[in-house]
Length: 99
Image (cartoon, rainbow, N blue to C red; front, side):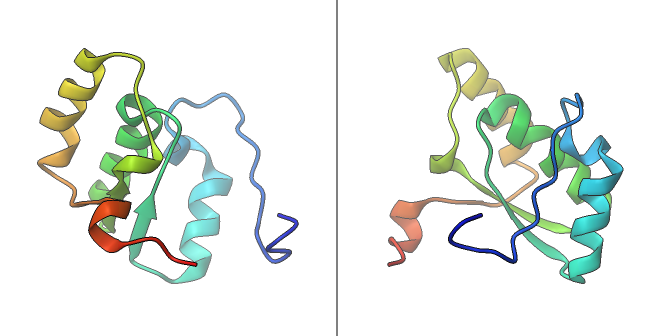
């Protein structure tokens, strides 16, 4: 927030899927954008659920796979089978770092 004073902080209120937080969805809708780049702490939960929800809501959602991780290889494998087939993914290795 210090480097981007215009950034909006929306506290988590207990939802596992951030898309279930009306303030979060409202903030996204206010941007008017239909393409989302999503990164999260855990790919199997924090990344998968909002990505699938955004797709269901009609957004183009790209997951940033190397900005997220899992605590087990099984969780990563499940994530591949569920979400990557439905949402395109990006990697810093694919796009190159941005200064």
